[in-house]
Amino acid sequence: MVASVVIYPADPVIEEVLQRIAARADAGIQKFGVTITDAKHPTAYWIDNAIEEAMDLAVYLTKLKRQLSAEASPCQWVCDDVHGHIDLNIPTPCLRCKPL
Image 1 (cartoon, one colour):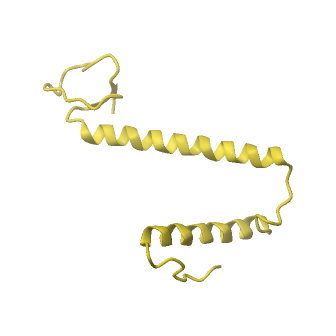
Image 2 (cartoon, helix red, strand yellow; image 1 turned 30 degrees about the vertical axis):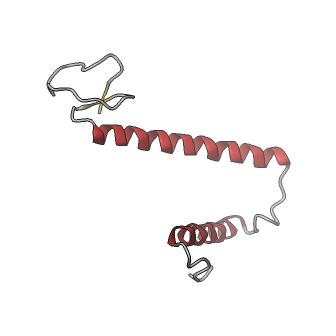
């Protein structure tokens, strides 16, 4: 495991990201037994893995966007557009809203 060493003290955000990358690399070595440099897979394998990671990122960002919309909306519904409804008891605030 990589010791926690300050690599980039000028910016704590960059430092945190670098530390997390190092920790993730250590976890990968533990799980797969090789470094990313030494891993041998066909090019298509790496592309497929990158696509899967990108899809996961899209899912996580969509979840967070919905969460932000729900937190910003004063009603009990979440919509693609952040908006307010006066009556919290109306059954359907608008056609694009979904229940929380």
